Amino acid sequence: MWTEMVTNCGGTARFALPAPPAAISSAEKELGVAIPGDLRTLLAETDGIQGEYGSGLIWSLSRIVEDNLAFRKNPEFRELYMSFDPLLFIADAGNGDQFAFRILNGKVNGYDVYAWDHENDSRTWVAPSLEKYLEWRLTGKIKL
Image (tube, rainbow, N blue to C red):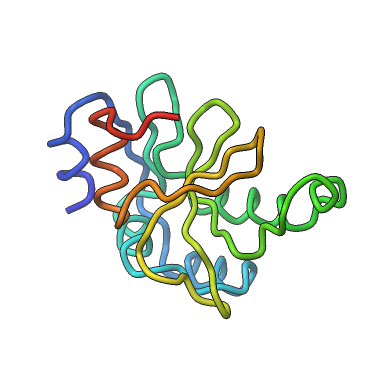
């Protein structure tokens, strides 16, 4: 479903092999947050989506875990930015900005996708769902 939807939006996208269900469960334990259903089904279909020029439309499961843990544990980031605990980063814009779901009480709160601006630490709503995020990103509606 996800690869077909992304392909139908046009542009160039590369898909990875699916992430194993056990790896998804393990990632949830490492991150301390339940991966939302849409992202879970996407990762079970393709472990990440690369856009044109290698941009990270959706990161691989391993990158989701690595980057989120790195952002949360970096002592310098604690001094520079608001806490990253309420975000689950899933992708990047290729310019330092990243896309994330919002976390509340250990669960992703809703389906909305936000952009985090690395220069001013703002967190801005960009899409009402993972599907719309991908569609709008591929069609140029989301510009950062």
